[in-house]
Structure formats: structure tokens, C-alpha cells
Image (cartoon, rainbow, N blue to C red; front, side, top):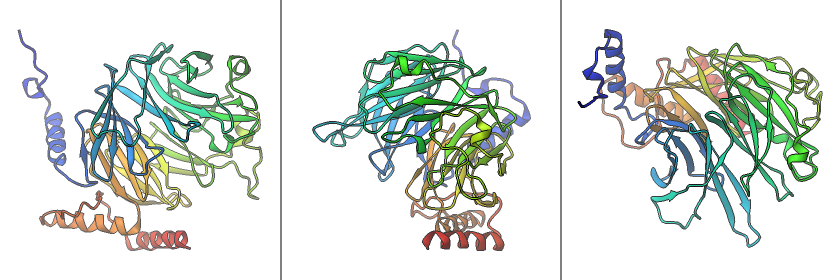
Length: 426
């Protein structure tokens, strides 16, 4: 007897039918200049050596590299038979002057898969197979990051799993160096404080966020090569609790090293470690593990209508961007916390964001990659395109990254955005 996965063959409520029809109609929109891929997209990272490249993780068990300038998939990394939930890349400068890159992918099969990334001269549409993997997690692998200290030859992969453990790996051998325990729920994100990773730093600081609402800190000794013995002293801090439930993402502002977080409690928050005089109350590389000694209380809260899945800040444009389960990307003023703009286009939950030039790149459960110009000119182009659509006029074919929101900028919001952009140009 054959089985069907067609929803039309099953009983559906009126509301589910209406929702399906809404998404089907919305799927035809071209806001954000979509690149359509065959499966759900669960994560995105920028290409560390090419400003036009991104890598995306798929529920189909593959990782794809996309050239945004051509909208082409240039590399497909295959191997896993389960969804890939997180990805990261280790870049190493080889003695002969070449750049070696290794792609790591955390998978629902409890393993970390890895591939050598071909050089830029490799043929397009390359399929790269691998059976190399690190094994040691007892549940889904949900977060990855690489600790590579300038001046040291040793690099360490750090992974977080749904079983609540943080594992440290020797990148070269795949050997497990240490298991760090202390979280009580699954790890959702791992981030290194960039202000603590430099040649000669005594400690690198790692932040971990989990599904119980806790953020914890650990100080990793880096004055000598990282090893099993040096990691034995590493402990997690008392919890930093600023959200009511799962913390999906933590992000360090590249210009200030301040901390942004986002959560299933429908908020994103900002914390500063500077006191009122602009000085650091505690050195970023201090071995202190007391969060209250490092961070002030949140001074900005960005309210959303649903879960907030990702957050990024632009390095040159004063914008905070958030990805929400309501399918939208929001732009905020980081100084005032005021909503500047809402981009629409995705027709399922937005799962990740990254920066490429003046654009925010987003990925979604809907299987599309979209790009959104966050300059004032880009927002104005969006508004015009949205207005044309609402008036029944055909969309332009210029490829301008658009988006949408029911709330166009008010006159006051336009003035505020213009002032922000003027400050940047100065």
C-alpha cells in the first residue's frame, strides 16, 4: 500500500488551509532577490576569504557555497544523511603562501563533518564528498566555533550539543581534548569574544547560550598551546540570565565589542561592559568568571511579535538587524532601540543572518537566500517597489534587493535614518 505526504490527502482545518494558501501566494514574491534552494536552510556564514561568498546549511544534509554576485551555487558539500544545523570555517595560512580552509558542519546525526575547501580556481558547481567526521556528542550538534590564536600553530574546534555539553577538539587529528559540563539544557550558540583573541593574550573568552535561558562564560588559557592539560582548569561561570527562555544567538558588535542577544522570549537585548566613563570595569581578558563584574544590565530591549532567531550589527552602518519567526527582518537604531524598518519576503521562519557589504543576507525555512540593502537608498527603493506592487504595477527587473513591511517609514523615521547615515559618512 502506497503512502502519501501530500497535505491535500489529509484532513486540514480551515485555518491551516488558509495559512497554506497565504504562504503559497507569498512564495511568488521576488523581494530580496531570492535564490531558491531545494531544502530548508538552517544556518548561514560569510565566506571568510571572498566578499561575495556565503555558505548555507541545509536540512537535506548538505552545505552549499553560493556566489552572491552570480547567484550560482559554486560548491556542494555532501556526506551527512541528516540535517546540518551549524557550520564554521577554519582558515590557515600555509608556509608556501596558500590559504587552507576547512569546513565543519554540525549535524543531527550527532557528528561533526569536515571537508577541505577547494581553492578559488576549482571548477564551479563542484561536488565535494567526505566521510571525515568527529564523533563524541550524544545528541544533535547545535553550535560550532574555531579558536585560533595568532602566533600559535594549534587551533581548536569547539562544539555544543543538545545534550548540554561543550566539546573541544584538536582540528588536525580530530582528537577530543576536553568535555566541559555545567549547562543543564541544550547548547544553542557559541561565540568567542573577539577582543580576547590576539597574539599574547593570556585568555580567550568563550560565551555559550542554551535553551534554558542561560548564558555562561569560560576563560580558556592561551598563553601556551591549547591542550588537554590546559583545558582541565576551564570552568563555566555562574549563569548570566537576561532572558525568560531559550537564547538562540549571541553577537559581539565589531565596533564596540558590546554584546547583543536574542531569544524565544520575543526580545533582543544589548549589554555594555563599559561604565559611564567609557572605561572597562573588567579587562576583557581577565580570568574573572562573574558575569555581573563584566557586563552591565541590559540597556536596550527590542520587542518582537515572535521568537527572535538571529541578530547582527553592521560594521559601518549604524543598524542592528534581527530575524524573526514571523518571517520578517527588522532594522533597528542601536543607540535608541527604535525600529527603523521591516523587510518582508520570506514566507517561512527566518533562521539566520550575515553581513555582505551593504547588505544583510538572510536564510529561511522556505529554502530561499535573500539580500536586503540597509542603506537609506536601499530602503527607499524597497518602498517604491512595494508601492508599485500594491498598485498592481509589475515589479521592476533591476534586481534591487527589496523587502516589505506594512509600516513604511514615517517622516520622523526618515529624518532619523538620514541623520544616522550622515553621521556614518562623516
